[in-house]
Image (cartoon, rainbow, N blue to C red; front, side, top):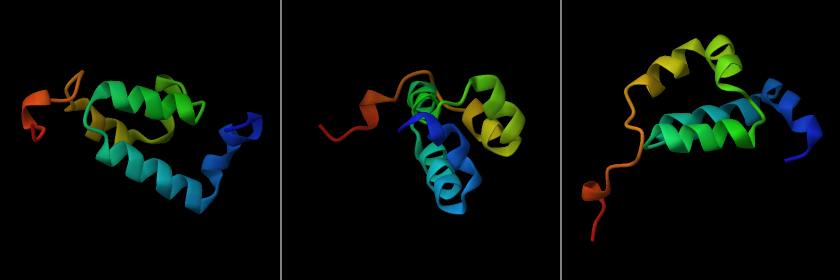
Length: 70
């Protein structure tokens, strides 16, 4: 992503992709990675997307490795 991408969440497509990525994240670590990809701080995420922030609150810090097929 380039410097202009911090503004790209204004487009419906980018916003939808962002929302899907957050909703399917398995851990807080993954969410932090997504926020970094979109150049979005945790504070800005919480302020701009309060509903998604509530969804993330229940996630573990790291993915549950025991749930993976092995």
